[in-house]
Image (tube, rainbow, N blue to C red; front, side, top):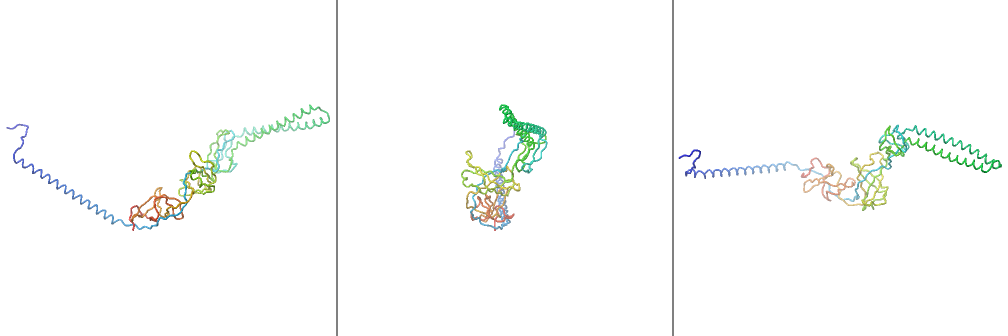
Length: 381
């Protein structure tokens, strides 16, 4: 009897025998696939090893010229930062008041002592001076007449023609007029100085660092007009740590570099030494003087300075062995028949050699005049 919508289960002996056979077939197929995968992997590894062996055979050995790392006695240097300053510098003020009617300099101009930098409106000063001079002349003429009268009164007193009281009155008038004359001369001199101050001049020979006023500006006595500075020679201000103060003396040579002139070394000579160690920073302010005839250096530049504070024995490498990579110095060292590129800390140059303060040791072999084939990891002949 059949039931619609439902399939009867097959319980015949044939069906039971067929199930194990299918399971065995699937297991055999899985084993075959695994074996194929292992074979393929083995073949891949074989090909990879063959490629590596072929690459190793194809890579040629590099012929290099080497030199041993030696040691030399070099100056022991204290490296500190410093700043360049003008030998003389002033923010020149007007020392007068009035409107600027003309300027004569621009930033960077070289000027002589007394050279005119700016001119103020001097019309009122001219009138004031003329009035003061005229008044001084009038007082002087009056005093001249009074002195003549005093001489006559003196003679009259000697003859008894006048009384002592009359004579004293006249001489008092002469003395008072003398004071008036002195005051009038002082006012005339002040008026002349005011007129002179309307012409603003350079106080010393130097260069214009900045001009602060333009035509039409109204200035007062304390208004800054221009910065004037001396840029040859320059002063190098350094701060020497307390433990190294004993090595710094007047006349000591100081070498330094600036980021604006890479590869160039400048020299200064210590001239001014402070007489007090600063409490907060435990250092001494020292100033060295350097020539700047070509005006390559500018006040305000930061520098890296080197002060000699003794001697030391350090490894040195030939200059021709150094390879510049970005901002670092490197050398190629031969280690067990292969090249190893190392970063070194370059120090003082000694002839054709450079002190290597870090990175190499004595008796190691470095490559001289490395070529394009000289690369890290390369095998040497």
